[in-house]
Structure formats: structure tokens, C-alpha cells
Image: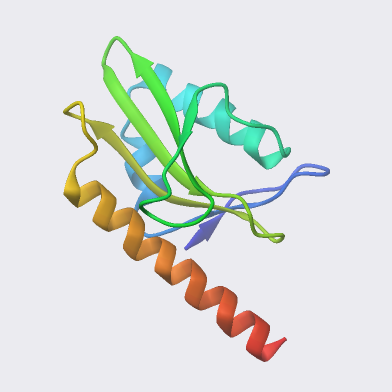
Length: 123
């Protein structure tokens, strides 16, 4: 997990697994759009295009990015006080989100929940 620098009144972003490296592989315009939308989330605003992704976990959302180079998604959860957790960044190849992409996001969401549980226990 990696974290990003903070500005005033901004929730930090914690990148789960390879989510940051995967996002950095997006084409330039999609990468910039993802950064802008995540900045909105850090400031407690909704992204401009998003949908709930409850099949991954409670509070999980997907940022929708459509560019000439294709469809890109960033799954995150922002319901926790301490950070925005980016679970998965990927290029969408079909109409439906692939089983693999759902599994990756679900596994990382469970890691976040385990950290939350440990934090409360150690708290």
C-alpha cells in the first residue's frame, strides 16, 4: 500500500496492491481524468461519473472514465475516516466488468476491512 501527498483538508489516498501502477499505465488523458476525479473524492465530493459497486463491498464505488482510447475504471472506497482506498484501476474491455477485476477489487477490499479491524483492536 502506498500513500499520496496531502494538501489541506484532503483525505489521503491509500493505493491497494498494484492500483497505482495500473493507473499510471492509463493513456495520458484517462490518467489525468482519474486524478481529477480522485481529487474530488479526497475533498468529500462525488466523482462526476460513478456508480455503486456493492457486489465488491459496502461503500465501494467505481469512477467511470471514457476516452478515445477506451473505457477505464477506478474502484475505491471512501467511507473510512482516515483515507480513500483505491482498490483497483483497470481498462474495461467488455460491457460487463470482468470476473477477474471484481475478484481483485474484492480481495483488496477485504484487506482494507482486515486493517480496519486490526486498527480498532489495537486502538
